[in-house]
Amino acid sequence: MSKAKEKVSKSGMVSIVGRPNVGKSTLLNKIVGEKIAIVTKVPQTTRSQIRGMYNDHRGQIVFIDTPGIHFGADNLDKYMNSAAASTIDDVDCLIYLVDTSRRIGREEENIAAKVKDAKVPIVVGLNKVDLKTRAVDEYIQFLEGVMGKPITEIENIALVALSGEKGINVDKLIDVVFEFLPEGPAFYEDDIITDFPQKMAVADIIREKLFNLLKQELPHSLGVQVEQIRPIKGKTMHIKAVIYVERSTQKEIVIGKGGSTLKKVGSLARVDLEDLMEQKVFLELFVKVNKRWRDDISILQELGYE
Ligand SMILES: Nc1nc2c(ncn2[C@@H]2O[C@H](COP(=O)(O)OP(=O)(O)OP(=O)(O)O)[C@@H](O)[C@H]2O)c(=O)[nH]1
Ligand SMILES: [Mg+2]
View 1 (cartoon, protein in one colour):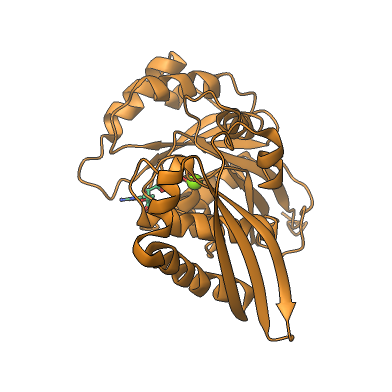
View 2: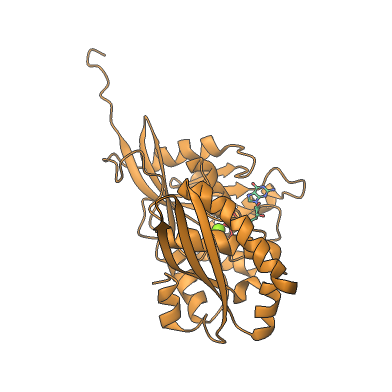
């Protein structure tokens, strides 16, 4: 009792994985306290890994938001799935997020089977418990089926029922993660909240506005490439970006009658971009047709999907 307890810090990398649309990016934003990952109703919104740092007296957690794991065969799909899967064993802990308001299907079964083989502790986040249609018990039964025994009997797995959007039990999730993490020094200075490249953050903001304004089937055909971010006369940031679509009919939809849709995308994006850059933004948007951009490695690289 005599020795004062020494303050030990913990640190670790924690990847958030799950089906598309389960709320991974929403959760990351809630934890970090700022919007660093875009969120839409459209599945397969996140296309690359996005890190968000959390710090408190216990230490530092680097959360990694990943693209939703899904079925799909072109090169962008492959990139997205591998960006998610590559984190599974490369981290100190996994958050496996499920949407308790949605049916358990084949996609979920596939992901659960992958997660089961992970060599690291797993926190299952039973998300969206704020919705009436939540089926928490069903999901627990499903998970126990996959794991082959009651979760309470497995040392390296914990369950947290939560709502990332409403902030229910997010603090509890962080507590549980800290319990699983090893002692260690911080990876980043404590004032850094993300290391997502600025060009990609800008592209994602534009993509979010497009996703929200357009019909469900169009978004997956869209890619945004930021060509230039350059200050003009010190006060204004000049941003030039190209929106890729697969067909000329899609180009017409993106532009809209008399340019109305593109104009709306531009003005919505500008508000968020000025917020991000803390200065005035002049945004120029172009639309280009390329039938195979989702499969074209050089375009994908230019878009930042390395
Ligand atoms: N009711 C409710 N809705 C949520 C919650 N978390 C996320 N959502 C909604 O679910 C949708 C998808 O959220 P995202 O955070 O983009 O999901 P994601 O898992 O990152 O999706 P992908 O990037 O496509 O894999 C959005 O419409 C969110 O507003 C929650 O806790 N409760
Ligand atoms: Mg996402």
